[in-house]
Length: 77
Image (cartoon, rainbow, N blue to C red; front, side):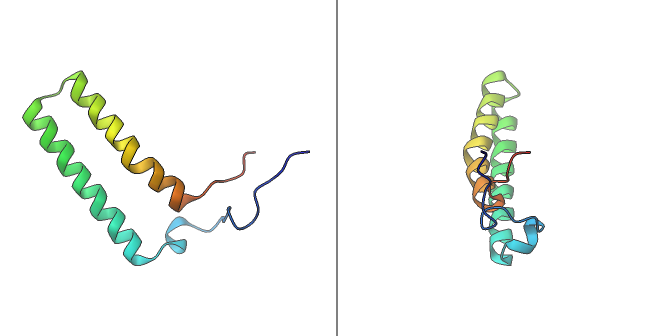
C-alpha cells in the first residue's frame, strides 16, 4: 500500500500565494546577485568548461535547497 503525502506538505495553490512578499523579494535579490557573479566570472575568465561547470554547480548549491524549501514536495503520480 502506497503512502501519500499529507495535505500539509502538498498544497496545489500557486507558489506565490503561499510565500510572503519579503521572501519573494529576498529570493529575487539572491538570484540577481548570483546572476551578476556569473556574468562577472564569465566575462573575466571566459567561456570555458571549468567556468560553465562552476556556474552549474553553484546554481545547484544555491537554488535547489531553496526550491525544496519553498516549493515543497509533491506526491508522485
